Image (cartoon, rainbow, N blue to C red; front, side, top):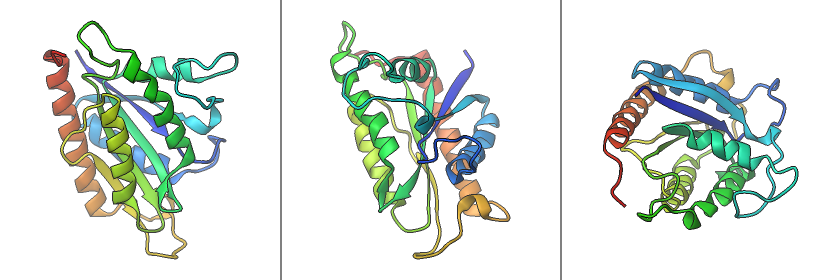
Length: 202
């Protein structure tokens, strides 16, 4: 079956009309995935949704998480995108991770979480160092709740410390970012294809 990916933009900007460097990085990965026959069906601006705090899959009236959860699990790959703030992943990204904690108690008869057999990669941007720490935060948490992380799973860009240039404002995408995006997409597509045809036994 054709592989599908969903991108989560965990920028702090709720208005999708506002430019986001995370969107720009997701676009780089989207192009790389298309060359590996993976369709990125949508980019969700998570801050635009009213996702309640909590660690269950439904926190009641007005909670937008159940709908996003369903959308996430309908895809083979998730691109977890976000900016670096204060040297860490954004609070929006942390909210998504916290809600995925419910997967731990939602296992099937073989002990597999809903995310088993699905692949996660990261798209990280920021104006100071912190990409390695952010990917470590993301990948540890995602692995804990059942996602599979491929080799070379993070595509990132950081500007110079105390600089003022955003990724979205670069004249062209750096060659190193393009090369990394190609590898992220290729490895993720390969792994997702393997897991689709041969699921984890549990």
